[in-house]
Image (cartoon, rainbow, N blue to C red):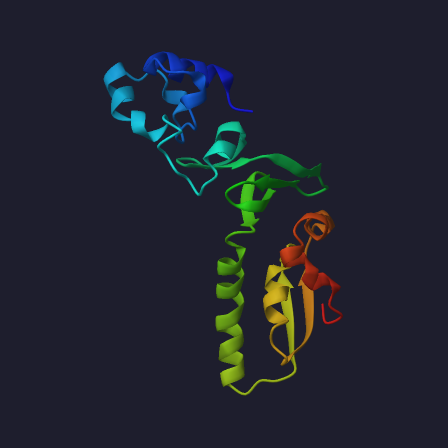
Length: 196
């Protein structure tokens, strides 16, 4: 669950109960040496669960664990309630978590790939402009190769076009396809279509 030490330190600094600490901003754990003035200035960011409203899931944020993607100068995280899948394949670490804010989320080597709440934005923008250009040029009977695409979302979007006859998905890691079939049917159901 949450880092108990971090929660204790924050609760002590702000003289409040542990239950009022709802989340820790990115990078804050490494900055607990902040002065009291700096902490006080940022107080509204992470306490008072009763007045803070985050997607009506504030109670879940209190009890959720967090998973992070970290770069050289950035850190992005989401809360999750359950690790649905975790397996080290021959090629990468494959995780699927269930998040109260983002839905089921796929991570490969701890890098966010897709999440149920936003995957459509990604897949639609990747597929529809390219297909529209081909259709405007009068192309029919399209045969499409997707490099990667193990979550199935790009294939799902391509299946919306009757002009697409065949879709080949060249995914290096079969574990990605299988784990998405089991846990993220929103995208992976495309693999059940005979055109794929």
